[in-house]
Length: 604
Image 1 (cartoon, rainbow, N blue to C red):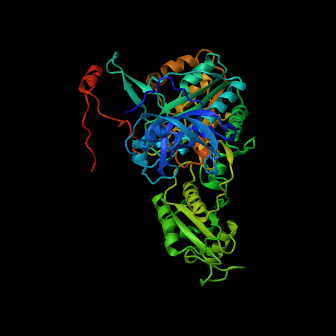
Image 2 (image 1 turned 120 degrees about the vertical axis):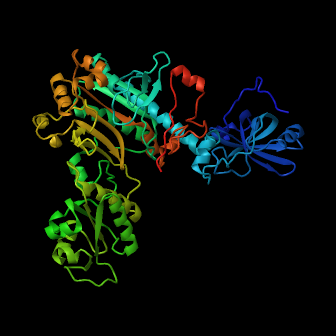
Image 3 (image 1 turned 30 degrees about the horizontal axis):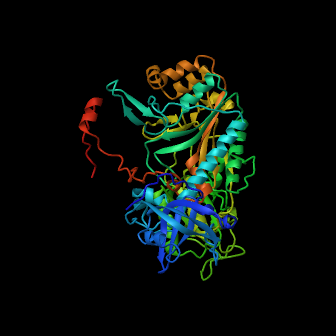
């Protein structure tokens, strides 16, 4: 027979009881985490969000409470009245381990089926099972800690923004579809048949309008939606810190975000040093082969194109430049291991070549102070093999990895991008990444345009309101691939945390950019009509940035997936297994919206 809560009032949380509470009466409430029956003594570990307390039921002194406790099972919801006493032997694994609660009365408020997996920090349950039974999974202390950390970080961010004079303003969830780099989620209108709202990919246009409206400093902790493929660090609905400022220099926006990140890191006891270093996009690509470089280890790239004669380039089908790096202590990698990295390079559209420096047990020609072994020697000569290794600063025991590309995309360093991925794989495999480091980096000087193979033309690399570096304006029509944007990214330990830009605010420049993109007046009115009208009413210089809250919390929590720091996350197949979403809807609902579902044939 279950009990009612009635007028019972909790006096203490389970995990907060301490030695100072000795001899106090207490009433705790929570779930039965564990039950141990020793005959005259029965123990229940009772758990709430703060932790666990051990409750003792003595058959001799409190027979009624003991009898009631015999009915309790794992995950029953209970309320326990009793007295706090010191334990004879403290349990150092529990925060409340110095004390226990001697029960005088037990109230069983609800029962429970046997959970599909144990409610412990370390479990073997598949992620799909955990997400399907998310209400069980969230009872574990680890998700509790992550969600509590998320709360504290967001609270700290709001404090910083308030201290800096920003106003939090909500922008619409139902708006119009505008191109922002990914597919929109569309919401059909019942009132306006055949017309659709879109869920915002970001508040981009609205926050710019708030600057036109004179709000000066805006921010928002906002939900955004992008219909794109899922990853460990990407969900189709995500949360970001969104901000915009009027009359800013780029450095002003950097300063705001640096204060945000310094304070967010301090929440978990990490000391971040501001200001963060800056690098130009073209330099970081050539040095690390990534626009989100992990700076916690070396293995930097070096251009070694001059080591490859023209006839070797033709035989190896090399396009563009060749980049190489030295992997410390990897000269002893087996043929199979090297082949695996070569296959990875091939899958990315390139090829990898290796030089083993001073590898023990190899027979090779001597090229200086130590031995080198490479299949490249026949193609590029022994002298060029030596020059290649020297260019990378290789030492005895190192493995030099040279990477080329089969195709060279306009405006990029294709080989460097492939080498950058191999650098990360080898850095992880060799254990040279210092996981105790927190390396921030600002990236600037991004290309304004990127080449579209589909359209065979230059298209906007960011949204079309991204500012243009002043001295590059003259190249807008003549050499678009050389034009740099006033965009910037914040990177931490190989993850892009945020992206933003100084915006175009002058109508003449905006018209030139639209013309360069080949957009007609009709296309512009259809995509951006209301915003273009707003730009004609005295738009101030402005700029902003969006910071991914989920990724920030993931990194500070020490997790590898943002699903671990989102209460109700979706799978990599974009499904909410707990709510069984997405799901079909009734025909009546579709009829009210004037929508018919068309069967889509699946490609074999």
